[in-house]
Image 1 (cartoon, each protein chain N blue to C red):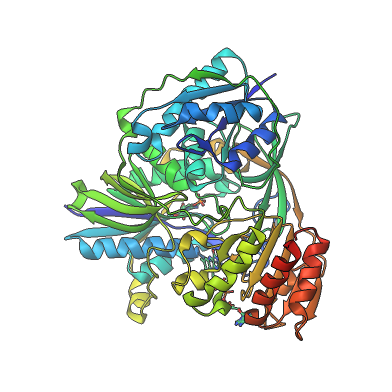
Image 2 (image 1 turned 90 degrees about the vertical axis):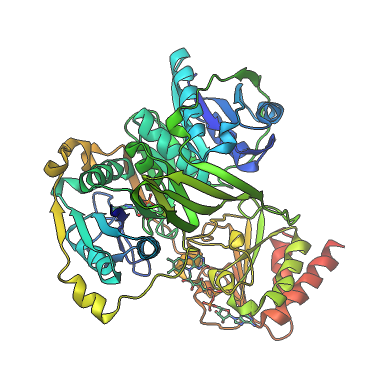
Length: 264
Length: 324
Ligand SMILES: Cc1cc2nc3c(=O)[nH]c(=O)nc-3n(C[C@H](O)[C@H](O)[C@H](O)COP(=O)(O)OP(=O)(O)OC[C@H]3O[C@@H](n4cnc5c(N)ncnc54)[C@H](O)[C@@H]3O)c2cc1C
Ligand SMILES: Nc1ncnc2c1ncn2[C@@H]1O[C@H](COP(=O)(O)O)[C@@H](O)[C@H]1O
């Protein structure tokens, strides 16, 4: 039996662009170019390595997002994933984390899975909560924030990993099916090869809408959201500070400043 | 008055500072009820009472250490149910650590609530607590609230002062049954991180960070010496971490720690957006960089254009002299 891996990837506004809020206080996705979240590239990479180490495995890339989010799927397919699932629906606009986890969980169940691989956090929302929410909704073990991960024994096997926490390093283990998330310490993601990019064009991407997942429009979107952004203000640019050139006195001048601020 | 559950982050009974900050914020919304789990849980009560906990719910079971996250969710859910049954629950607050966020996330799904993560401030509002967040690498400040269920909110370290406020702190044992389904992820081994003797990075009032400009692990003592003279924590940019010069646990930025100290000193760091994301909310920012065009200078209150190998050791000496 083939090991069924689902990788969750998010299409996000480029962090180096000028990110803004739209009038309805959702993330403005029109002004800034989007891309596959860099932190999710690590998830795709680990899925590929798990597949390479397994006898038989298949990787499905799953995204919930607007039409352009297809780019994120294509990028993952060009890295080597086998097929894609794209959940897109007008009613999804403004969905928050709790709602997204509902959509992802239903789509994962519909696709069929032994292992779900996520990134550690999305680069726009940076919540780092989705993987735990998915484990909760799917009722399977959560093996998250891993800087090292491996799977043994195929679809009924085990997943092992190393979690570097604040106060300790933990070795974790769980039986499949399970949800894992991987950090940027798990290993550099590969670049798509020319062959990979060509092959990706022919790989199947299934398009799903909320109806296909038996989700009502009022469970998601801005109206159905569990949270509400009431106000977003651009942080005033920090007022220009004092800049001095060190010509032998730099450290003294800086010490003077620090003393003035009562740090020394 | 309504009650507010505060999840206690502690190491064998010694309460970590972010939890005391949570108690300060919790008091703005209601009466803080602390939930303390695992080894040493009961030992946390005195400190929690001194900082405003009217009640301390404790539970100690091997499962909290033997399995990842889920058993703690079972316990917090039991606390939510017990407090809601007896009165009204205004919110559940947790520290914004990786674990705090994951516990909060699962709890929110279980009790049908919304969740806000990484709040930097919290105030009471007519329709429930209003959380301030700093988003898009701190280029925006937002105010949000939760519209469904009992608000679950995780708060970043250094978001509020620690304020003593004596309260009863009555200890009550919390009855918890850890579900079999919560024993899915075994913690096979745990290796505590060695203490450096320096303040914790996310809790420190001053952070001194080094980047690629430090140019080698063997030079990091230059950064450490300045940090020690100021009683500061040591941070590093990802470039320095990736090069193997400093441990990943000290990385500041999007994929490392997010810090918000009174004073942040960046030496040999260019100030990439992902680094800024983790330090831009610092109160005072100082940079030492030999490139006057480095983007970090756009953020600073005080910047020195110069070689860190001249400036940093001289500054360390200055600090030592002035401190006497
Ligand atoms: C998904 C993702 C996540 C990331 N997460 C993080 C993160 O969490 N944290 C993070 O820091 N980065 C992160 N990065 C990396 C980030 O983009 C930058 O590459 C990194 O911050 C650069 O580190 P640096 O400033 O030390 O190095 P550089 O950009 O190389 O800058 C070094 C600076 O040192 C100065 N310098 C050199 N020698 C001296 C000297 N002798 N004296 C004084 N100055 C000197 C130079 O002028 C230069 O400005 C992430 C990137 C990605 C894509
Ligand atoms: N819209 C989405 N579509 C697919 N996967 C997502 C989406 N949002 C988040 N994820 C996954 O969940 C992880 C954590 O996201 P977050 O909790 O939003 O920080 C990401 O790294 C992705 O793997």
